[in-house]
Image 1: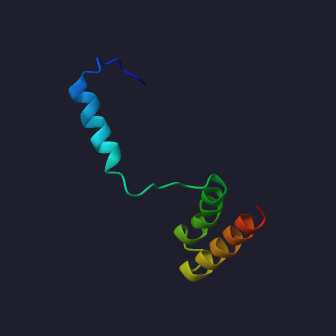
Image 2: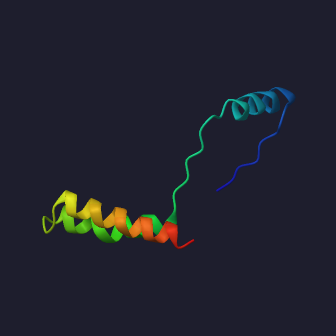
Length: 68
């Protein structure tokens, strides 16, 4: 949903200053998130240990990234 705003010089300068302060960009990988969503329920439902789930996530994510 978008709203229309009048862009004043003051607003433009404030926006530019804000963007200029950005030092970190966060990005998620849909393929890796899919792996997490597939593996996590096993732990949440008490069927698998956190170590097992994390090991599987790490191994599968590494494979996906290396195949690119």
